[in-house]
Amino acid sequence: MSQSVAGNDSAFSQLLGMRILKAEQGESEVRMSMQDKLLNLHGKMHGGALFSLIDTALGQASHSLFEGKPGSVTLECKVNYIRGVSDGEIVCRAKVIHPGRKTHVIEAEVHQNDKLVAKAQATFACL
Image (cartoon, rainbow, N blue to C red; front, side, top):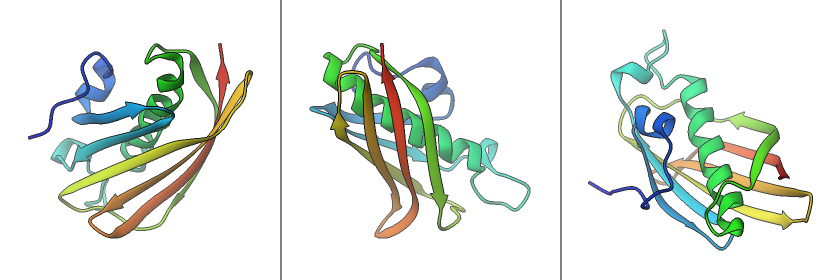
């Protein structure tokens, strides 16, 4: 099983079982496996758990431009949920598309194998 990038994961991301595999040069990759505690009433991964994965990947991409230290916070995020996740592992890849001085605009996609699960765009405020 993959380990997180040393020093980059929070207690919250650990609680949900996320593994930060990459956080460098404005890009990140974070994986999460389905667990019973992440299920909604319909037997799918809860949207809040999926959003948490996305927000973590977005933050890791942004923070990587501050030498891995927290240097920004989420201002807004828009997510399109495309397909439900019942089991297995998902991966979220995020990339800073505008590394401004005051804000970062970041895109992210969540995939399960070759299928798109969700797509997001966010703005982070640089601290």
